[in-house]
Amino acid sequence: MRHKLTISIIGLLFGTALFAQQNLQKPKLVVGIVVDQMRWDYLYRFQDRYGNDGFVRLLNDGFSNENTYTNYIPTYTAIGHSTIYTGSVPAIHGITGNDFIIQATGQEMYCTQDDAVNGVGTTSKAGKMSPKNLLTSTVTDQLKLATNFRSKVYGVSLKDRGGILPAGHFANAAFWFDGESGNWISSTFYMNELPKWLVTFNQAKLTEKYLNKWETLYPVNTYVQSEPNTGDYKVNYKGLKTSTFPYNLKKIAKDNGLGVIRSTPFGNTLTKDLAIALIENEDLGNNPTKATDFLAVSFSSTDYIGHQFGTNSIEIEDTYLRLDKDIAELLAYLDAKVGKNEYLVFLTADHGGAHNPKYFQDKKGNAGYFQTNEIKNQLNTILNEKFGSKNIVRSLANYQVHLNYQEIENLELDTEDIEKLIKTFLLKQDGIAFVASMHDMDDAVIPAAIKERMVNGYNHKRSGVITYILEPQWYGGKPNGRNHTRNLGPV
Image (tube, rainbow, N blue to C red; front, side, top):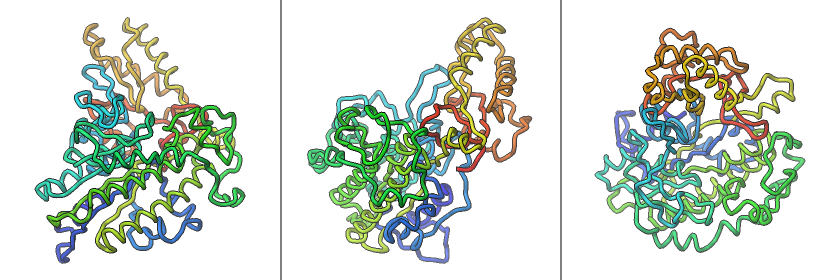
């Protein structure tokens, strides 16, 4: 879905020879939409409940590329957004997780962390962000280069990583949400002060206005594609003992803060509002130089809600029905502002979403939980007995084993012996399907497609040297909520 789509966009933007026989007209504006954690089947699962002007319009008037797959592991928000917009993989673009470890030093690094910049519109650490950790250029960067920087490029998302990474290194700006203040912010990587229109937008306090009440769009008994009783698989809002409609968001916000809007469908609506305000005030699609402009929009509430309530919840169905209306409003605005057939929209997802393993277990399916911290402690105990150090394994983050190379070097240990012991131990654990060191992938007895994904997801400076793959419907986590993938199953 990602790579072929990105190539098509490049062809349209830069007039390359994808369709050499045709004289393609460049769009005035490209709007890239990423729906965080959107499963492919949501296009059709809820299709009879969508209106005609959102998802259905995209399907009817556009092209749906459905014969592709994610060719790397692991799958996280930062990796997905980076891969979509670079057409590359973590091994090359360097974003190997939402958080990763610099292997040479052991330093933990957040994907968009940049301690050299300051926040704009905030004094908190939430503003100390930039795309500097992204090693390759994006389609938005290439657009800037192709037009001698005449194109205007912006990124918008509740998540900093969802706005910053797609917008690339040369963006005019990226804006993201500060849950502490309820405002949209940026960083000095882009500017020294927020544009006046954004200050005005923040002063309207839409966050507070949307945090009122969440009830289902339609009678709750019509949500037949969702489980009516999924309390055992949900994570309740702070302050609530149960999760049932309607939700009093005013009360919930008092206990959870303004950032709780992320975990409601109105976080998507707020994002749509900002996208429209940005297009209007920055006059995107009406570039006086005739260059194509680009707006990267990532709808993040789908991810927060998916994690909290689960794939089969009424909350997630209602969220997509509401997002359908938000997309329809955005498309209608683009029709009026830029003109029909004058802009290009693509929609994709950064990763999928798996059913809650406990839900699968209760339905008598195979599933389970991999106790990451417990396994890490057991590993270090065994390694200590063999090599005399309790700190050889730093972390099992991102389904990888991260070694403490400074400790190994100080003790003059053999990394090959350490890797062999770790692999032998992991393969004996419940829920483990495959384990491989990146040093001996050629000899690993692993299906070729999975091996390719392991290699594509490995960056030797930022990834653990050993990757482990869990069995279908297993993941490292807690019984409530859910994770991005089924590991060996489709998403």
